Length: 400
Image (cartoon, rainbow, N blue to C red; front, side):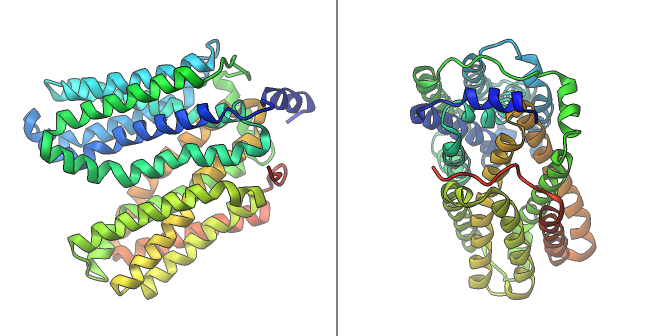
């Protein structure tokens, strides 16, 4: 990063934090992630209503993730001449339109189209989240603001599945998506009242992505990011069969443990802003190190329900700081192209989700959940070593 870029990035930071806008974005995140997770808890009634198999209805999730991946790479370029306020409001409009289409979908095709709109909103929002945060609060407060925004993810992780299932039984799955519409409308109104005008910044060309990856340390950072998220999603995807097969947890115990994971994840996300103020590189290093150690611990000490519950909750708490840390890294390492850098992070995470689930499945078939957790732990420890040996952040975060 050259000196001119640094000056331009610093000039974009406001003197006073716009906390109202930050919380409005957090509500938008809650709405987006809730909508993303709802099909998982409503799959059976959705499939029955549309006259398709559950496997076909499950493509609603696949469509959203695939479109989010593509959107993350092109959205900054596609909207390079548009005020970022209007772009962000547009994502909330897409959230509302998506939920309306799903709620009234007469066929699977219409439902999938609605989920495509959601994928655009999710991929676009996460691409711009770090860059937008830099323009809403002073530089020293960016980690705290990102922690608030990402708390919307943790809250949705806790609430979406159980609430979707509960209300789906009471009022039907279509009405659940109508409730999600009201959430999107609330987020849109709040954002319209609080988001300031934000002119586009940076080059925002497709070639910019390649140029960013060629910068010193960026490619290595992206590799470490992919390794950390792949290790996590390999673990999380096959957590249920491990808990059912090793400590022998029943349905109620499983629900309690997953709730514990979600609550611990929310706590970890909420505390991440304070942790990051002590040191970005230290956080990037310690979180995967802790997760790797927990993965090993689950293989040796997770044979009882209590032991497994404690370790799973600790994993959730450690992972809570990971997305916030990597988003903060983008704001520090690529402040002049934070939107394009954010797109690369989103793409890296989507790739990690796919890789972690696919590779984890092959390992699970060959050696069971123990093999998956061992491989996940090894990958996370390797990521920690990579960060320790060859990865440097531009500077330690200043305390706010």
